[in-house]
Amino acid sequence: DQQVKQNSPSLSVQEGRISILNCDYTNSMFDYFLWYKKYPAEGPTFLISISSIKDKNEDGRFTVFLNKSAKHLSLHIVPSQPGDSAVYFCAATSLISGTYKYIFGTGTRLKVLA
Amino acid sequence: EPEVTQTPSHQVTQMGQEVILRCVPISNHLYFYWYRQILGQKVEFLVSFYNNEISEKSEIFDDQFSVERPDGSNFTLKIRSTKLEDSAMYFCASSALRVETQYFGPGTRLLVL
Picture 1 (cartoon, rainbow over the protein chains, first blue to last red):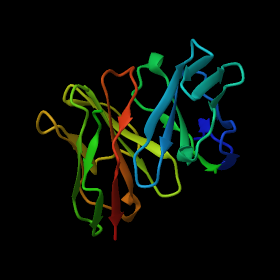
Picture 2 (picture 1 turned 30 degrees about the vertical axis):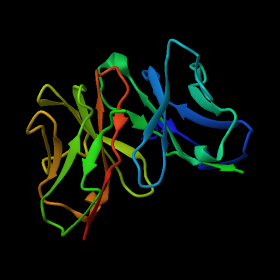
Picture 3 (picture 1 turned 180 degrees about the horizontal axis):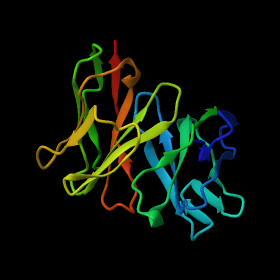
């Protein structure tokens, strides 16, 4: 059941450059999307979210873009820092349906090279 | 900054034994969740809990699993008779409201031998 897909298992970026992480979804009922960062042996840490009524949300170096027609979202990190090296998970849910669960993607391992 | 805490960080058990995983959610949160991540796989939803009852559960959450909020601070996941395939990282999460962001704990790594 691949409702949320992150097709790139890994990404390497030079320090100071932009990191772009992508996520695709199939369920048109999803209306709330989140990005989490995960370091080894730690739990997912919330980064940023976006509601389906918006197409962009920005928080410091992190911006999430949502393209509803393409069922695609992306996370931009500018500028990338070595401390950003982690696994990034995209998650989605359908608040309007009354569900409580988040559906996660498989994650993208980001490595920021100094 | 308030955070979700989980104990133990690691648990090794024999197949067929009962385990209890413990979580202390963020103090003013009302909604509690358990997720798990089998090694190399996705984070998967198990169950949500609100107002002292299960509000939603996945097909993974069968009769071997139960959750409880025994007091005002702890939230527990019990696996009655563990199986090898229960080996995973178990994450507790909490949110202030259903429509607000879920915040995750550091996880308990469960190994069933």
